[in-house]
Image (cartoon, rainbow, N blue to C red; front, side, top):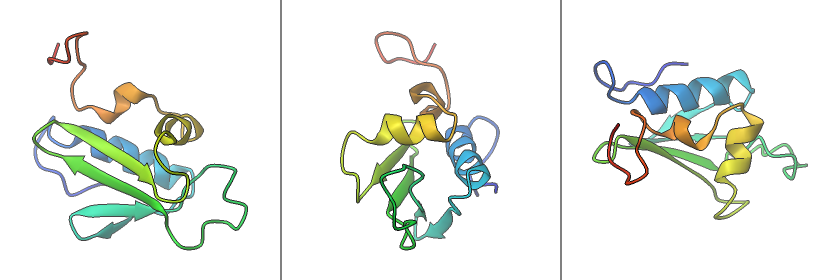
Length: 102
């Protein structure tokens, strides 16, 4: 799956996240300005038939935000780990310790 993000560098994190979710069988789908997908966490024993994971690209920050509405805040790192990503993968460009682009 490829997101509809703009040119090189812009939206790279969104494409990365959507591709990883798609490869994990989470079936991301566009929903307005964002995407929804099934949460890959094991706690979704019902199979998460109704997508509970929101994926949103924050253009002003150059990053992608994940939120599982069933798992609640704090599940972001667990979701990333299950699909083979890290927190750094949510950013278009690597960040320094101060939060500025490297």
